[in-house]
View (cartoon, rainbow, N blue to C red):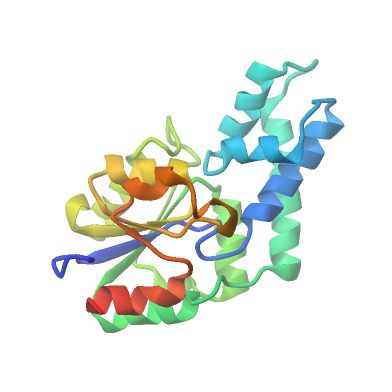
Length: 220
């Protein structure tokens, strides 16, 4: 049950607000394969939730390639994701009602994501939800992205709400670790193919889609 003391809801973005995780995975797979890495599609799941420069670094450390340029590789991946968002991006099930519900209940609403500001802007403009957020934070320029809790702590501070009185909504395990480390109450919405994994037990609440958020906030 979500505590009645919750004062703010902080949303992750990719995989929570917009169905972009498969696009990230496809873009990462294509760019890394073009560099000659012998990856399989399932391998890409190892880095879900990490900041894109961390993803590139992760694979370089495991399968080094010539002429390493983290920024250039990351930019190729980001450009492909932005192109998709602008053309085909759509909100995840229940997003608009969930945001409206939070506002109706007088809760502050934040966004805490590992994605860059260029990705954030593309998503908010495509979904036309920029006005829904009281604070937005990116881990783009932080020393560490998720699973480090800093981006969540920064968002709570900008909202003016103690972290322990925030509900964080995540679809990735790295993001969930970050939110738990920030001492927030957590709601995990794992991808369908991961729902049966026992590791999600560390979330305070679990749901299949954001359509369940209004009932959870109401204590139903």
